[in-house]
Amino acid sequence: METVVSGIRSTGNLHLGNYFGAVKNFLKMQHENRCFFFIADYHSLTTHPTPEDLHGNVRQILSEYLACGIDPDVATVFIQSDVPEVTELYLLLNMNAYLGELERTTSFKEKARKQPNNVNAGLLTYPVLMAADIIIHKATKVPVGKDQEQNLEMTRRFARRFNNMYKVDLFPEPTAYNFGEELIKIPGLDGSGKMGKSEGNAIYLTDDPAVIRKKVMRAVTDSGPTRENQEMSEPVRNLFTIMKVISSEETYNHFLEEYNKARIRYGDMKKQLAEDIIRFTTPIRERVEEIRNDNEYLRKVVRQGAEKARESASKTLREAREIIGFKPF
Image (cartoon, rainbow, N blue to C red):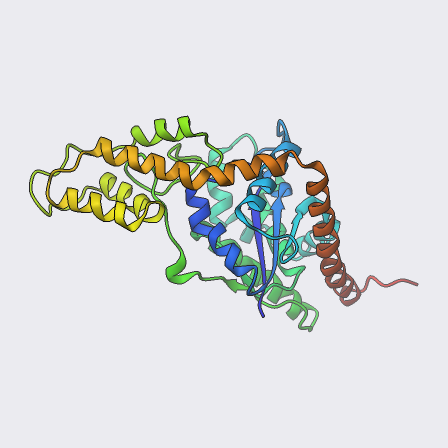
């Protein structure tokens, strides 16, 4: 059984792209591996150092993941800031992380360009904190997107460097968890690219029906096919991609046939897609609201998660401290 660690951003709501791109796989993964899922509230401060409601953001995203089916009795679900061992390991790893390699990371250069007035030390050492999050549980697998592959490679480097410097075999070198064909990429509603918060083209799992209908009806299309079996434009192909995932096979095949026979009415397709999305998201949205208002349940989840995470983290940190030479008299 593999040990898997995955960080969850603490800002922004989950959208359909998140659900089908990662969450759905987490639901399966938690029953096949020893999983640690944490809400990365420390990481969020690198770009949002003065959040308006950090606690509220954490509460919301935790409620959403639980509503989607992450089981705190099966996986270890916790909040990053509830595990102080992570920050101590982060400090120790920083002693052997070098300025040049940190400045060369793509994520640092991009963020520094986007926020030139907030190039803080946490932003520079983001890969080190990420490494501490992962190797403190001796993870062997990490689900990462394309934008985090370099940071995962740096995690491997920091683990290898520690092992080599102290001539030990404490930390495994984690590899990317590859979902393979199971990974579904949900496109946005603006006609190109993937669905995402920053792109402004997303449908969120907590959007109410009126908002969903409005967003879908505004989705970009084209003037329609002028001949049978005409190749689809990217915006239309995107709508069909979403429909294939959300709607029934019968519904998808019906509109595909209408398109191939050059008689499709995009308005009808959008109306049907909107209703299918509402049918899919409504149970999740209602469950999110129920969990978010259940203070006792949320306290139980985070307390239980912190205890399990700290048990794992404290053992690793104790080993690392002894290896370096921090020992009691």
